[in-house]
Length: 302
Ligand code: EPU
Image 1 (tube, rainbow, N blue to C red):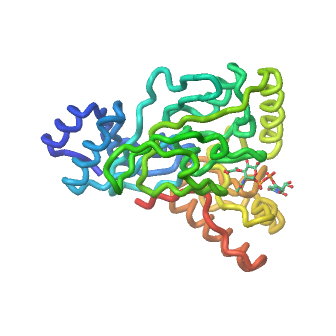
Image 2: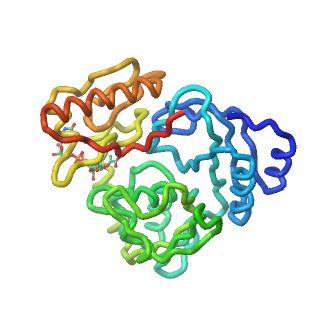
């Protein structure tokens, strides 16, 4: 979607928005798939209610983009604009056991920054790509750790109330790859309450998780992490693997040879190819295991 009305563009600029016209979301997502639209980069949290009000008044559909690491975006010209927060400097401020982190901060860098200051707990999340905001919305987890366990409070733009609110951790429910945030809530910042631990101990935990991940997941390839959620007590990766579907490809979309719940883009895969592969694998698992798999990856149709 292209914004061309000069009055709207002028108002957005006055609200501190940086406009990147005609941006390909394939360059902003770890899967490397996605069509084109205008990207609106937000420099000031305080201006978000006015920006959203402006977009609503002009009936301009929009989506909030975090780090783009768990996202499958449709092909072609997209029918909505994308909003993304610009990371402030500094993006993490420590106060005793508390880490005040901007939603645009990189998750992995936040884990290592806190480690250097003897704050641990999040070792398992090392290697999970994306921003703190995205991790929060999905309650990202790995190796027995989930970010929700450490949330003291969250600063969020609540679209339904058209205002920025602070929520206490106990007002939010954090479940397996799911939270009680509304789909149009925009994560702005979080305060994490982290256990004190010696750096050397944290770094040891980080090393172990890194090794496990390197041994079992396709690092360095374009992917959106796991495609499907695990049903309770089961691993979808193992099921797809048992069906002999590793390496199964549609165009440049391929079931990873290393971990069967990762689908990788081995060249210039389209969203259509990825979605066709997802549908095929889902149907095969349903036929053989009688289980209807739920997407873990978030799909934004064009
Ligand atoms: N397995 C296979 N073949 C495969 C993949 C896995 O046999 O192709 C087997 C493994 O050998 C292991 C079992 O399945 O015995 C479980 O595999 P793994 O430890 O890799 O865990 P997972 O259940 O496949 C989950 C999360 C990952 C997270 C890891 C580590 C989901 C959908 N996946 O994977 O999260 O990194 O545990 O904690 O919950 C993500 O969220 O995107 C993600 C990758």
